[in-house]
Length: 155
Image (cartoon, rainbow, N blue to C red; front, side, top):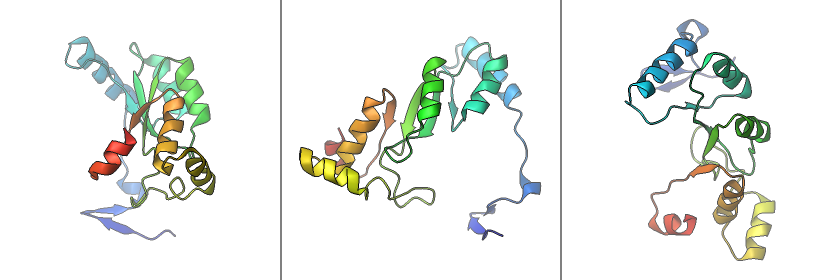
């Protein structure tokens, strides 16, 4: 049995009896109403698989504009990227550097020997190589840093 981690007042992983299934159809229809009323310019989803997107597309009058997912050279999301492209859904890539230090993140990107070799041969940082790879996938990139120098390098 996996260990339980306390996050504020909640247990992680949650107990099955504590999980309330979301009515995605009702939520999506309400989001469509918000867009129709002009309360938002566009609507989208986050961390949706191809299966969940198919489910929405089966009933949606307005398809998702975006699907925000983790994407980086070690988690390339190839199948999802092609599905979204074929259905006019823009991928917004978060954690393009792998989110080392986050409970869900990985050091795989920044510690990749292949990326280190490419960076060295190009006179760039591993972060710059990883960001360039994500950029070349034709997706929107969400990268953050509190370090001004790294922000400058990432740009």
